[in-house]
Every structure is written in structure tokens, then in C-alpha cells.
Length: 261
Length: 261
Image (cartoon, rainbow over all chains, first blue to last red):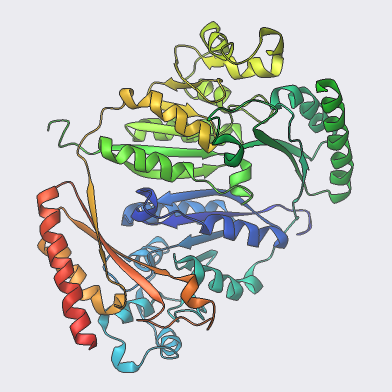
């Protein structure tokens, strides 16, 4: 099987008590997933875990074995609760210490006299890891084998992705198309959707309802056909087949609307 | 140890390919976490997993053993990709079939002639599970042992929580306070934060920076002290101690601001 045919999978580990408490809303997962897709990498699973050393170490080990690429976010700042770098080192049985290349990167931003013990904590990098540039706040991320360790602040995380892009070898791309099915009940479409999926091996079809709050807030009631919208989404590595499926889904929508009308 | 002293932990399982692709942004995790906290339940871990039967079954089993309460969202609609109910039944070794009590609930909304095979799929409930009311779209969620299975659409999920509230027996409440530290560099505060945490056993302190996009978009540059904001957050089950820590954190902010000049 050539690289083009193989599905390359990623795991994402979002680290931070503030995510689990609901205080901070994660957006990094979606950002990473949408960045990976055009390169031919799909996200297989994501976990939101606490700032707990044993949990971080175990999850990194499990994901590193299980997925082609692993991305972690959070816990690489200067404070005592930033334990991710040490955990990555422990997960791979590597030493960790302040590294001169990381200090050099930080000196682009910080004066040497401002690099106190806390800030130098951000230059502690597992042995043998390669740095990930941080053009925003200049404390580096790092790559250890197939694990990319990044900041949790979305703006910094995004900036780090730019330096990772060249290190990813993708596989089969998974394309997706969406067909608007507003006004159609999912329950009325279900049989047709299953039929189309069965008739097109290699294509997976999902039906995604969502409620429009602008339509809902007056009555406080949701009525099928009126106040919610449905999209049919088909995904496949076979782009040509996907276009055929698009046509079939559009025909299904026309048929169902005629039956309703 | 009385119930009041014990930490009661929850696990959250967010099910859906559309979350992993980055097409849909999950908000249910935070909603559940913020709803649980006042009842004395903390979220220990959350996982975002694919619409894959083996993964759903394994994760439900693992979380059901590991956490006091488990919440799943997604995959209980009428279409072929809605496989969560069957997976929950499989995870607990129970039969699953259309249940009359679920049909009765759905008849509050649907006419009997509209309850086609697809919609009746939403009345398939694992044997022995108790229903969770759905006042929005009337297809029930259900509770199987310590696992609550809910819809993925946020509006419906929230409505289901109301019917679960009486079924949760919480433990120690974890309180949190936040102190604004805008203008202070995390690296300057790190030593003081660690000191305060060490001096107050049972209190965990986090430092959370975030960048203000309104301040950033002109220069495209982030400067410490000017364009990012930091909050110190302390969490503890001991509310009185937490108030002392608040004072200590506020004093730290005053001291650091004075040093910065």
C-alpha cells in the first residue's frame, strides 16, 4: 500500500484542569483537525486530561504507540502547574534540562536578565527532542519522536503549527461534502441515507441536526420542519465517488420535500 | 469518610466523527462540567471518540468502572450512524429493543403514523435502563447503571440534564476563585505562586494567560505586560482557606506591580 492509500491517524491530548472544569472552552482540537485534514491526516481520538503527571505520561505513551502523530496542548508555561515537558521526558525515558538552543530562541524576545528560574523552565526540553518555533511568545514547543508538544493558548498553538507542517507525512485525504436538508426530518431521511451509504462502499454518511437559536427563542419550542436545520455530510477518500453521492443526496432531499409538500 | 468529604468524579464521552473532523465545535463538555460543580462532582477526564462501536463499548466500560458517573453525548438519533444505544447495551451485556415507555414519551410529540422504523430506533433502550426526559424533541435519553446517555445537540442535551439532577449524589464541592493579574508576566509570578500553593495544602493554583485579539490585531505582535492578560485561579474544597489564598494572591499582584514600577 502506498502512502497515498494509507490512512494516517493522529491523536490529540488537551492538557489542563481549566478545560475539565469548564472554565476554558477548548478550540485547539478543531483547529488541529482542520489543519491536518488537507495533509491527509485524520484525528482518531482526542482526550481532555487533568494536570496530573501519571495521567499525562500514560496517555502520551498510549497515544504515541497507537497513532502516527500525537499533538499535546497546554502545560508548557513557566509556573509550577506546567508539568507537560517533564511528563513527556518521563514517557519516553529521556532526561530533561535547560537547553541552550531553547534559551537562544527565547533571547529573541526576553532580555537575558529577565530569564529568571521560572522562565528558564520554558527552556527545559527533553533530550534529543527538536524544537518547534514560537513566533508569538518565543518559548518553544518541541517534537519527541511522533509527539508534538505545543502551548495551550490558541494564538500560540496556531503559530506553532506553521513550524510543524513540513514534518507531517500524510496519507489518503478524506474529502467531505455537505448537502443542506433544512425542513426535512431526520427520521424521514434515515432509510434513504442508509441506502445511499450501503450502495457506495467507502463513503460514510452522517446526518447532523442543529437548532437555530434565532428561530427558537421566541416560542421556546422546537417543531420538526420549522425550527431546526439538518445537514447530510458524506466523507470519503474517493473524491469522484463523493460527487456521485452528492447528487444522490440532493435527489433524496428533492424527493423528501415533494413527499412533505 | 462521609459523602461530603469524598471527591465524586465524572467522566465525559463525546461521541461523533463530526467533532473529530473539526466540523462541529463541542460545547457539551463545558456545560456538563459547570452543571456538575455546584453538586460536588468534578470531571476527571473527557474523551472525544469516533462513531465506532468497539471504541464506544470499550470507553463506556472503562469509564463506568473508573468514575462515579459517566455522561455520553451524541449518536442517539434516528439515522444509521446513530449507534450509541446499541453500544451501551453491548457494554453492559444487556438486550436492547423498542420500549413502550419510550414510545409513549415520543407520542407526546409525534403522531403515531409518523413513528416509522427510523424514528422507532430512538425508542430502542437497553433493558433495565431508566429513561431521561427530553422536553425539546421528545426522544428520550437513558441511564444504564452509572452511565447517562444524552443527545449531542446542545439544546437537547441541556434540557436532559434537568431530569438527571435528582439522580446525582455529589461529594465535596470544589470552589474556585480568580484574581486578575493583567500586566504581570507569568514568569515573574511563578515563584510566588508556587510558594502560596505550598503554604496552603489542599489548594491548587493555576495561572492562565490569554491573548486579547483586540489588542493584538494591529501590531500582530504580542508584548509581555501589554497585550496579554493573566488570571490566577485557585481551587479547593476548603472555602475558608480559599479566601485566605485570595488575599495572598492579591498581595502578590500588588507586590509584582510595584516591582515592575
